[in-house]
Length: 83
Image (cartoon, rainbow, N blue to C red; front, side, top):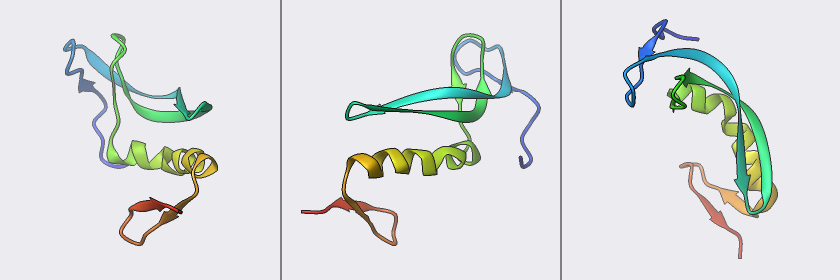
């Protein structure tokens, strides 16, 4: 992990948030994938992801999308459906 603080404040309830890795289920077109998502989590249920946190599971999400859609990835990061 980079220069992240030890604790951040929840934007919803004002309580302290803790770093954790939690299971997150994503459903796309009837298929569900559960990933272990790092992030800042609060007891009230809120969670905050940094860019690093999102990057940690990006390949999992791309896999879920790739399994369901025939897509073409462009160098600029955009993808198009194949006809």
